[in-house]
Structures are given as structure tokens and as C-alpha cells.
Image (cartoon, rainbow, N blue to C red; front, side, top):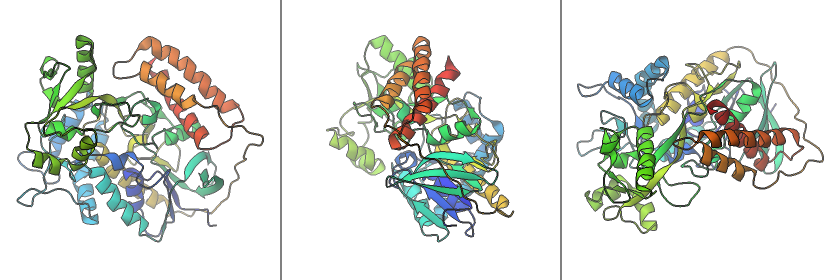
Length: 482
């Protein structure tokens, strides 16, 4: 059966790709990429990947663990943190051996940088486009394998769980088709598009989380949302991120009066964890009555900045800003999700055969707030564990099976503006400092939208799937907080 696979991986960011790369070469694997292959949050990751590669007198896995707990408000899952920091070295070495080109210093050693919340320089990076480098290398590895089918512009519309395994309704080139497998890995990224402004790519509509929720999987701590303090401040829906590592290399945060202010809020200054810096900006905005904030790294040499941060440097030039001479306007926006589909230490959900890796999963490793550059590491560590767990299960016999999804007749297209309504609700009700009353009002509105999408006979296309996913995500988030 051409449409039957041993494992279906939904999502082609770092988590999904690395899971596929770590699977046995004898397994028939389908990797579904929602849009073009580079449209994913992992590709956008600038700063790097954290990890103690070779413990020294200066750094250790114990220190990495301590920094992770501090950033997470000590609400992290201790077992997950232990796994993350202890397996970091082997996964980093694995991708280096696969061809990932991390920056080196003049002595030839890996050039590690510093980011907010880290007590040591342990961030491996490829200039300021680390995610693009990592996903490029892993993707090339995956696409070179005869046992893996890589499919772009393929949207998961529905998922069904049967005694034999899972069936997925896929939309590609305006046509629906069904694929089946005993194992499914959800690696669909976050929920950034539930907000008016986000650093996330267009795929981040919470599709995997919504699908798992409808199957009955536990969704945990979806209201734990990270707002990055230094997104480039303009009116774009997809905000360009000014990496944490810019502050790690010495940038100052300034208010509307061009004055430093972080000393009034936290002794760690600009290198406090992201939630602390974002909240500090919002409190300073209230104090000054202005949303104008800036990053200042003008004391650094132009050649250094253009070489260390080429992507950021070039982007800012297109905006008329030379970061070696000019201030960079910044403001917090939605960036990351700490909650998601609850999984165990092997990335398995409570539903047999269903796994979740990367941002859509909840391993508990991040606690209440993710430490910078632990996200790519989490995707690799738990993606590899998912692959190992599935490989063990594939030793058992699994029979191919088919499944038929009923396509609705006489269906109509969803009304325009539904996703915009949801985004406005979330932006007003649950930003850096939540508004309780607006959250209550927003929950009622989102509940009505969700009910409408579930009961009216709408055409199952991209607009419908993404609107329903966003409504489900917003519903779960606001239900947790009111």
C-alpha cells in the first residue's frame, strides 16, 4: 500500500527532521512539510543551541541545569532537565558530524556566545542564522535517504485513531488524500499566529496541538507563553527578531529618553531571562507613557557587527539603520510556547503510538520560562528519544491498513476575518501582563467561534484548518487563565 508508512512525521522543523534522521534506515517514513521546506520556526532561530560540549572548570552540566531552573522559575520537570543537559553533548556532536558548521574563534575552538539567563558562554552558533544552518544540514540528510518521503505544501487536515494506528487526511494541490501508519510524530511548532504580532513563521497555527486535543491527548500549560523582549518594532505581523545574543555581546536597552533602565528592575540588567526583561519593558512603558524602546550596540566595531550578525545587520540596513551607528527600535512580542502536548521522557503522549517533539510538545524542561537557546537543543534531544522509542516498537509486526475520511457535501467556505478576531482577542487579553477582564470576555468570544467552526458545514481547506487550530489554542489558553 503506497499510502501506508511505518511512521508519519507531521512537521519539518528541527524536531521533525531530526526524528526522521535518527530513525532506522529500514523504516518507511513520511515527513509532511506544511509549506515550503524553509518555512518553519527552527529556520528562523538566530542565537544558537545551548549545551556543555566538553565540561571544563568554567562550565558544567550542573551549571546549565541550574540556569535552566532559574529561568523556568523552578517549575521545570527535573527529569527532563537532567536528560536535556546530559544528552546535549552527544546531540551537538551528532549534528557537527552531519555537517553543521558552528563558528570558531581564531584558535580554531568553537566560539560560544552568552545569552540572557546563562551564567557561562555555552551557546554554539552559526553567525546569527544557526537555525537555518542546522535545519539545512539535517534536511539534506533526510532528503538523501531512499526510505524517507519528504512532501512539501502538505497540510494535515484531520487525524483519526483506530485499532491499527493512525489515519491522516492530507490536503496537497487542492486535493485530499489519506495516509496511515502505526506511529505518528507531531512536530508542528508553536501557536504564534494566535497573536497580532509574533516572531513565528506562517506555519505556527497550533495544528498539531489542536489535533492532539481532539484525539484526547493531554494538553498542559498552554498558557505559558514566552514574549521575546527585543523584536524589531514596526507594524509587521511577523516581527523580525533581534537576537538575544546581541545583548549577550554587550547591547544596552534604552527607554524613550535614551536611558538605560534595567537596573531599576533586575540586577542581571539586560541579561536577565526573557520574561523578566519583557515585563520590565512593559512596566517602564507605563512609567514613561511611551512604547519607544531601543537596543544600543553602537560602541562595537562595524566590521565585527557585520561579521557576527550578518543577517540582522543586513536586515536593519534595509530599514535605514546601521547598528554600528544607530539605535535599534525594539518591543516585546510573542515568541515561544513552553506548554503543549504533554509527553514523557521519550516524547510519547498518553495515546499509544502518538509522539510530539519540539515546540508543540510539553516535556516540562522549560518550566515557566524557556532559557535562551534551549529550544533547538530540546528538539534534538527528545526527537532522538522519540526515534529510538518508535524503532523499538517497529520490531513488532504491524499490518498495513486503509481508512476513509468523509468529505462534507454542500459545504461553504468559512467567513473572512475569523483568524483576525482571534488574534485581536489574544493580543488584548493575554500579552506580557495579562488583562483578566479582557481574558474573560475573550474566552466567551473564542468559545463561540470554536463552536461555530465545529458545527457548521464548512469546506475543509487551509483557511478552515488554521482557523479551527487557532480557535482551539486560544480556547485552551484562556480557559487556563480565567
